Image 1 (cartoon, rainbow, N blue to C red):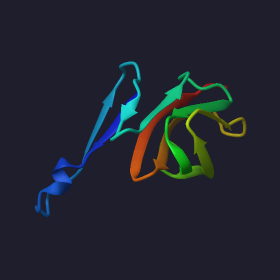
Image 2: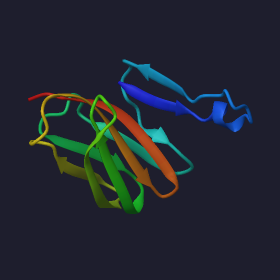
Image 3: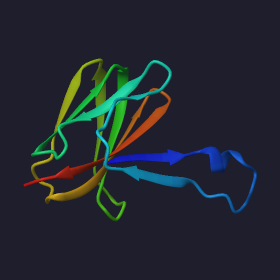
Length: 114
């Protein structure tokens, strides 16, 4: 499931404007920022989260449970290829993966099957 947060509402100077949450069951394609792509390989995930980005440099990863609470945070180094993150200690369920790299933030909803 793809998750995108719209900043269009935030760009308006309205005190009542709220960000929009959009979800979809479509196949996840890489998200592109100016020159940066990010995607999650294999969803549902089985014990290991595999991320792929063409970015290089420091990357902050956060995995949030269905309530939005962080259950895993990790500082990683993106090297332009796949990154594997073990999730074996987390119970099965739905999670949101949040990745901050360069000046971009990417989010993906993943299902962890045990």
